[in-house]
Length: 450
Ligand SMILES: Nc1nc2c(ncn2[C@@H]2O[C@H](COP(=O)(O)OP(=O)(O)OP(=O)(O)O)[C@@H](O)[C@H]2O)c(=O)[nH]1
Ligand SMILES: [Mg+2]
Image 1 (cartoon, rainbow, N blue to C red):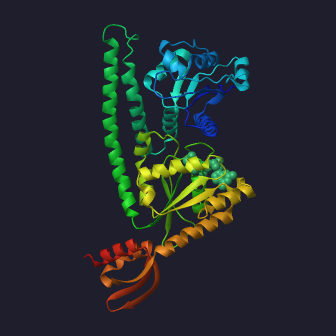
Image 2 (image 1 turned 60 degrees about the horizontal axis):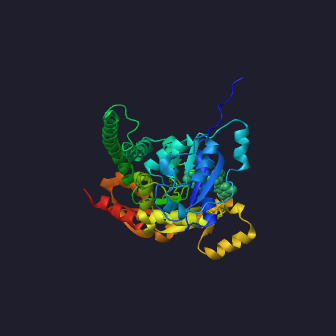
Image 3 (image 1 turned 60 degrees about the vertical axis):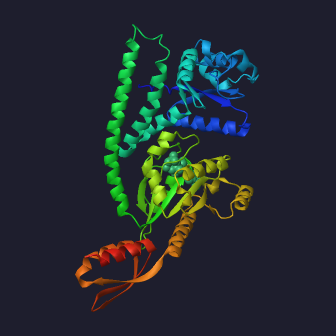
């Protein structure tokens, strides 16, 4: 009988700085745990360190480091990891054993975690030191997110973007490792390998940039063809239920998973049942706390999608106790990309998991929000009506004359506006239409052109 290889085990390390309260710290660790699971690892235990002040090479105190190493089977010793007497004085250790029963259970079964995942940005030297002390492979939050993006990327554009982000994340780590030279064989031997690696990375990056630009020219063309169409973008924190709403609104089979970053590519589908003119809905990549900057920048298509929409549906998992922090993260990403100027509606999703008291509290706090569940068809129909009403309010009526010599344009008129009536006179087809002002202006322009 075939046996499945055991899931790799990981220990989470949380660093709690004074400005972070216990609830936020726990929530952050829990989220990291979900990210780690998305990556396919099992969380075997958690070590938490309270830390005052920032900076300093010492991320963990010697006590915590020993605890961690006891789990992973490392030595627990790295000279530069031991805090200097000054920083030691500023550090307060949690007295209780952070190694939980769960971890002991794994150790009893003879399994040792091979990964240490730190919920904090780590410098390359911190990663190296921690790897030495623990004997495990160390990743920080950014590293985990980059890895997830790497595994989930599907389209060519996403793959190129992720490879770029990954190389940008790897390159500085190579650079700094060249400082500690004890691994070098002869004089300069290690250096030259590193130089070579760095040059390779640089070359590959510029190659990727060219390929990406070509792919993006294509998608720009597709996008400009959609200009002046009625467009709605679903945006929000990862796992909020954007793709579930997309499915429900458009009847499409986009991927829905209880995973973080299930969606990495923008998809565009038509609102069903179809309206005239049609409404396009786009599903986008989710946001997360400390989303690496390179990754934000590289997900241009998602962001452009959001920027060019006429309406943003800002989806939030209202059943998540930390939804307000998630809301804030999403808002700040949208601000960063300039999408805060796009009209938006807050959608409080997963209301089926919220009790009556919670419902009342949410309604009071967010009186303008749309409360729904993506799993309840009536809720989805109501959202569809809200979307339609939004566009109706934006639309204007006008009369267009389609000369007999330009009958070929009739398809375009029907695509981008609703034709209310049609008459024929000596000048041509006289069409009373209703549509977005931008679309009507564009139609007028194509009618006036030769
Ligand atoms: N109970 C409940 N679960 C929901 C609802 N909407 C979505 N979910 C679940 O939440 C999980 C995430 O849903 P997705 O639609 O994949 O979320 P997403 O926002 O697209 O997530 P990413 O693509 O990872 O950013 C899935 O397990 C869904 O079944 C809802 O209204 N109620
Ligand atoms: Mg999704």
